[in-house]
Length: 76
Image 1: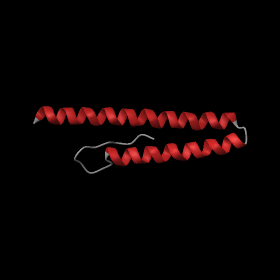
Image 2 (image 1 turned 90 degrees about the vertical axis):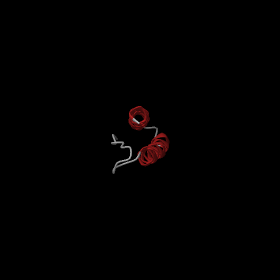
Image 3 (image 1 turned 30 degrees about the vertical axis):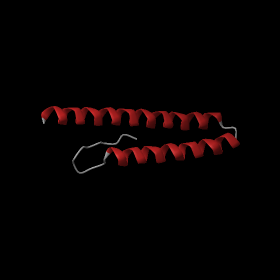
Image 4 (image 1 turned 180 degrees about the vertical axis):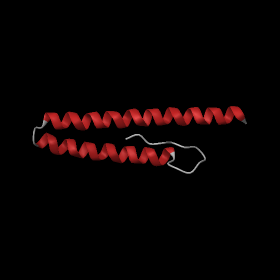
């Protein structure tokens, strides 16, 4: 689920990537609901791991965006 975040360039914006991550998390939550009905603990853990990865990716993307903004403001 790694996405390239660009600032003032063509490509995925932070907002676009964030929306995609939220959509991914929403799908994983729905899958967890189905797995819980089947009492599939292993499947639930897989979906939880994917959610955790998406949250880490959001955090990393936000940090990358902050660093780019900081570099841009320091150059100007």
